[in-house]
Length: 267
Image 1 (cartoon, helix red, strand yellow):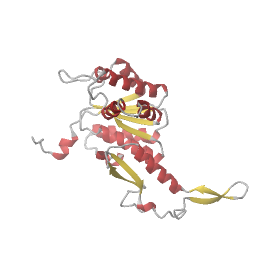
Image 2: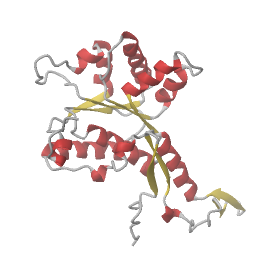
Image 3: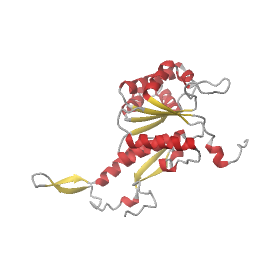
Image 4: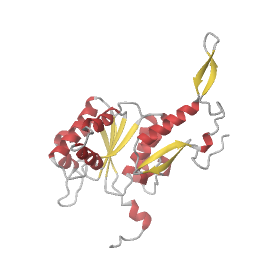
């Protein structure tokens, strides 16, 4: 029976804050490697009976740690894993079950998910957890972006040496992309064009995308004057989303307030 590591919980990697995103490294429980002694390779006999050097499994752990760093998960979600998502209410259990099923059965090009509901219901936690599971447990490349931050980064390219394509092309190519806070922002025409291009290119390439949004999907009840997601992103993009994703409501109470129990204080 394998003893559980008290540092990584047998995840084999640990995450630490690095600026505004998480950085991952192999856990101390992976050193020294019991197979290769940290050399990085072992010897195996091929079909002709010759011994040849082959990469050790510890190399894969290092690779997945790099991939998790490149996923750009926000520091706030350092503890976000599927097994840390609380399920006090039935709607939380349903969302977690959907996320687990998606992560375990994921194949490149499958239909994505769109979690929608009010702030604080765990939409981003689940999306970040799915990325962490796919990268660490299955070695699948993924990337997390908040759309507002992407727009900010693109705006800086207007006056700098970096091209906009250098920012968007990796987002098109990655097997799984999470776009957080869809619909948030000023909704300028060029911002809509960026979203349209990114969504359309991933749609045409049949690459899987997950979205989170605070805006209502479909004909659900809304507060007076509250916009729907279709109104925020436009009919063309919304039509793409309907085909690319399965929409799942997360319409419970704000769990941040429920956990803390204290009213906001005026500064």
